[in-house]
Amino acid sequence: MNKLISFLLVSLFLVAVASAQTSYPNLPMEFTADVQIQVETSQSPFPMPGVSGTMYYAYQKRVQRMDSTDPMFGQTMTTLDRYDQMNEYNYAAGQSDCKCSPITGDMPLYAVLPGSTYQGQTNVNGVESDQWMFSLSTSVNISLYVDSSREVLTQAVMIVNQDGNTMTTTITFSNVNTSPISDDVFEVPPYCSCPTPAPPVVPPANACPGNPPSGCSCAPALNFCSQVTYPIDSSDASTVDAMVQETFNNFVSFSQPTAACASNMKAFLCATLFPLCTGSPVVMLPCANLCPSCSCGAGNNTCAAALPNTACTQYGNGFC
Image (cartoon, rainbow, N blue to C red; front, side):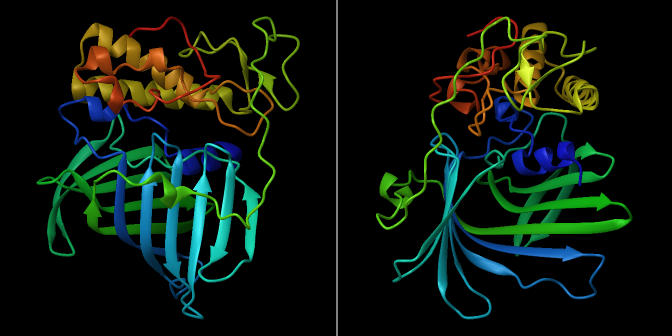
């Protein structure tokens, strides 16, 4: 799978702006839920062992935790993803062993994305659910199933077709609780120790075209996101640019936003899909003042950009 598709799968198009549109469901950005995860591939006639457990998710805190039962040994395992540190911690209940590794992608976002299309209703484990489908590309489709009475997820399905092979990942949600989660749920156990990446250093304004940070590059002139004149880490800039434009066009066609909302949405999409590259593993989110929610009919707390950042990706001018 190429770098572009890998990035899209991990980040799930880090855009929470859809929640600002009254046509789309406003899904919670913090919740606890029982989940079942199943992965199937056309290369194998048998499904992989499923994973079930409890998910704790807090997008604006940049943290996610999954407590699951090992299908082979019955042991309770915890995977704690601290996207604020870009570290993942894996440990077992009642033991002092801990494995840690760096996170290389960005936090998944469980939101109905701009340009999603309504596919009607279906029953998910006894709950009538609205289906929303989004095509990341010709080979990647994401469907979210939403309990419209509560505006919470009942299921998320990602289908990837690559080189003649199909992989389907299904996450089923139940007992969804949208109450705030205590910070201690996401505390790193004292016996876990990982080096924390240093805070990113913002490159100077003249870093492009000739002096990008190590591991970064300067984009060619882009047709749609024309103000990407800062260092980026994508080698598929023209392809990403075309996908951003298609996403934007779908969003405009479906939502028929005001001119201000459309303009702000474009800037936010470009900053999101072309994050500022600093050479650090810490992902640069859009600057908070790029959040288009203010002009699209909702408060800034619904926007993925409204996060505490010391460094961020600016694109054009701020709006809010």
